[in-house]
Amino acid sequence: MSKAAKLTFLGSCVFAVSTIWFVHKAQDIERESMYQGVIRDQERKAQRERNTREFDETRALHAELIRQQPAVREDNTSSDSTS
Image (cartoon, rainbow, N blue to C red; front, side, top):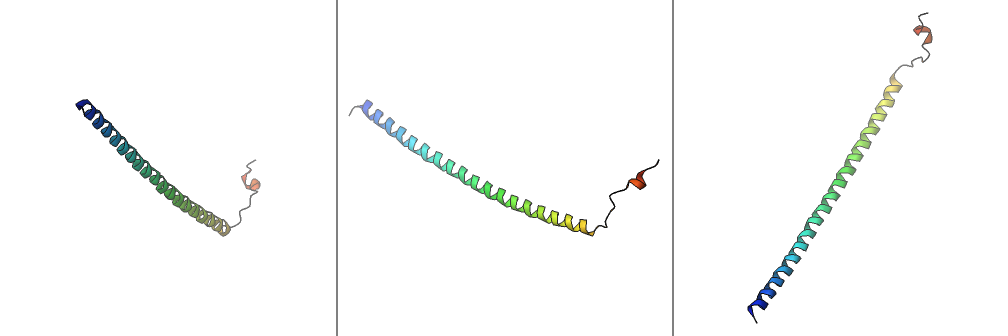
């Protein structure tokens, strides 16, 4: 085998191995990125549940405070008129 043939074969092998390594590395990076998306989705879901629970508690508290307040007459026109 000539020296040129050996170098061509070696170059082809290096190129093939480099390509395979790059593809596997890209797959690992993509897999990790996709997993981080799942983690973010779980965090968003938990935050949404906390927000919903807090909103329901606030709404219940508001309703309770409204019930505790004395009834206010809505027609205040007689006390507001200065003429």
